[in-house]
Image (cartoon, helix red, strand yellow):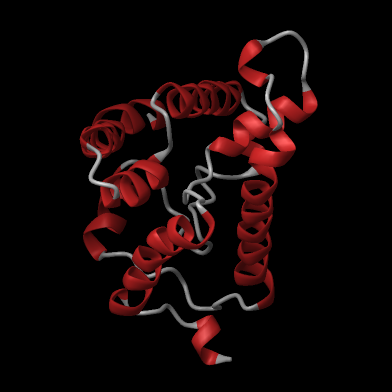
Length: 186
C-alpha cells in the first residue's frame, strides 16, 4: 500500500501519463482531457435552443464524464482514505514569499488563509471565485481545451496551437503569481 500513499517519482508518473495519451487514441479513439465535460454537462442539463449544446452528449461524453468521476473518486481516496499526514513539502523561499504576503498557515494542501469557507463568504472571495471561474470556463472553451488538454494531448499531437496555448498558460500563471495575487491579497 505504500506505493499508493507516497509520491511517485517523475520517471514513473511522467511516462505513465505520456503513454496514456497515445494509448487512448490508438485503442479507443479518445482524447485525454477534462474540459470537454463543461460542454457535456451543459448539454445534459440545459438542452434549450443553443446550437453549441445540440449534439448526442451521451454518445460523445459518457466516456469523458466517467473519466472525470474517476478523477474525483481518486482525489477523494488520495485526500481522505490514503492521505499523507506529512505537511506539504514546499521550499523555504516559497514559504518566505507567502509569509511576506500575509499567508501564515501551511498545514493543509492549500493555505487556509486563502482557501477556506470563511474566505468564500467574503465579497473578495466571491468575486475571485466568480471571476476566476468564468475566466477559466470561458477561456477553456474559447481556447479549445484546458491546460492538461493542450499541454499533454495537444503537444503530444505536435499541434502548434497547443504549444502557443501552453506557453500562454505559463505566462498567465507567472503574471497572476507575481502581479495580480499580491494585489488581491493586500
